[in-house]
Image (cartoon, rainbow, N blue to C red):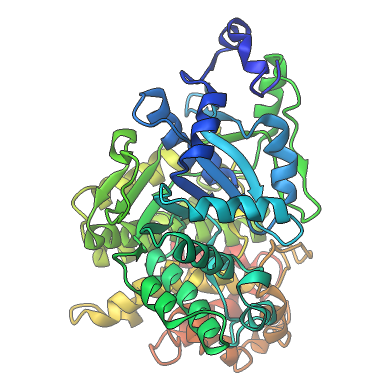
Length: 537
């Protein structure tokens, strides 16, 4: 059996293999999408294929919509060539249940995958045509937090962003520049409203997306590429809205056990592939079953009935509170704690870390003791119930093959949100004192210990990809494994970087704690474990 339109015609074989098939015709959906596109999504990775696309898939199954989603990538175009085009943009979604069983379903709501890059002029022209169509209601994003960044850690524009400012809409490359260019196409063609929706795990994601797009637009105005009328059109959120959202679903790298199970079911060509940019991709997505998506209901050109697929549509304050609950307290900080310490201590799964007494205690302390006191209850979800599910069911699920190495990617882009926001909340509260925090500083020290790329046995290991890794390692170059005294006074450039942490750790009274904990953890082999035992028992 092959995962494509023709292959799905043998329904009996798929059903015999325990695979749930679409109730709609993919070809008819694709034709409708081409005529009347309503949804474009940038970021063609696992969270999109395993969650966002599944929402539209469910609506198609219920007969509530006729068209699908056009997926586009702005970074790793081989992803489209390898796992979209050969499979008619279909995904084999495999949900990994806590009892070890798998739920398999073909998600077919993506009409096609396109490459939004200069080397793919035909695809770019297709996207321009879509943006010119008044029927388009929304463009969404899962491009990770770094996808919105225009500046480096020193606050300077990246060279490729500067090039986009200089070269203008017709010759740009960054995802935010591409977005501005496509909006210009829409303005010039029809001026129809549109919602531009970030679905990434970052605080105030809609605000960040809007700020980055508007920076590009303003620079283009300064350089004579766009008119005052276009700037005014994009600025008015009655024309171009930037709803905030909160998304949550763990979609780890494709697992060998899933690949083998699909092969045993006689489903062909499911093996993962590695793109030239070192992205690990597969025709299937394995994921946990729990999922949450909360979106601010501001869609000036209409939207699909997403609430019928389980999405919470609400106001901005509720989205903000829900996102803050999840990103800064109830899940993401816990993930980062497990990621950095897991790499240093030699773990290869998140689930196995939850069996470790110190690491399990750390995430409970960071979540329950230091995080929950500053969470505003979003009302639509209970923070306590959410974190209970995370700690008791989701993170310990041994059948979700998530790794600390995956979660550790791009940590420098996450720390300010996952920990800095909580520190700021303590500062803002008269009844709380941020200097009493212990476990968040321990998490921050653990990250710096991780960046040294030396495990707890004293052996070198490879850190996960991170745009600031080289810079961070240079700033930590004076810190020597086996010499605790090498920390004192040698990491001020890091500790005072409020872009990195969201706050200046010296100014808020936490630098000494982080510095001292790091010194303890580099004393020699076993020092990381000893430090964890000291603080966590």
